[in-house]
Image (cartoon, rainbow, N blue to C red; front, side, top):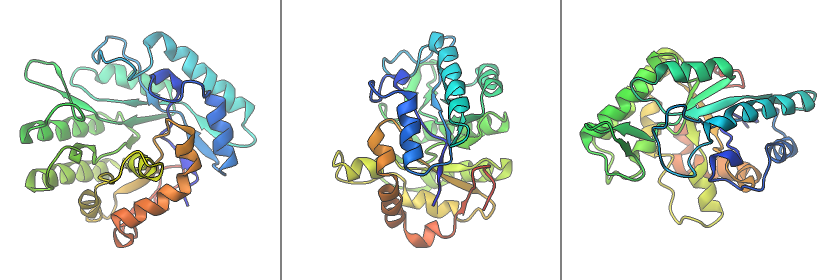
Length: 270
């Protein structure tokens, strides 16, 4: 069972438990037997692109965030390995800033939530309807991020399926683009545990993600690396980790899970 997690948020993003500290999360990870954790909170923007509230930390919180994690890393170094990081989105033109964040941290995960429309306004995957053309642009953004050596992990690579009525040719094409480039660049893709945990606590009555058909395509790529990501915003996501793992295996199918190449904590295939 995977006992590391590289997808962990903090109160600074504005949509977590705001009374839970970074150290509270670390104590809980230790209690659950984890030996390595990276904080990868939603990255701040130096030049504001995403104007939504309670989505990401402010730019003036960045240094405090990184410094606090380094303090915890030293404090708990005999018990658990703690790393710094961010969850980022790629947009054409922001490569330099994302590489700056990468140079300041241990882990960068790409959690692509939006693209530019033709007028260079944000089009957000959970908010706006995405056309087939939008989905192809979305996959090209993820491809470009990997080719620019920005992410260490691709978070929730099947997020694009969330508002799609079927998994047809265009959805398959996007899956093949993401999986093939990730394999080529040796970048792991993440099975995200958010929805299984929401199901366990009764907040949703149906699991749509991880998407079984996406992960079936992933098995065609024999050198593709895979990790689980808790996507921790709340304490119960860590507390219910083992239950979520079992649920996601049933949801995707043990026969598919068994064909995937899961990584160790150095992101190498076990």
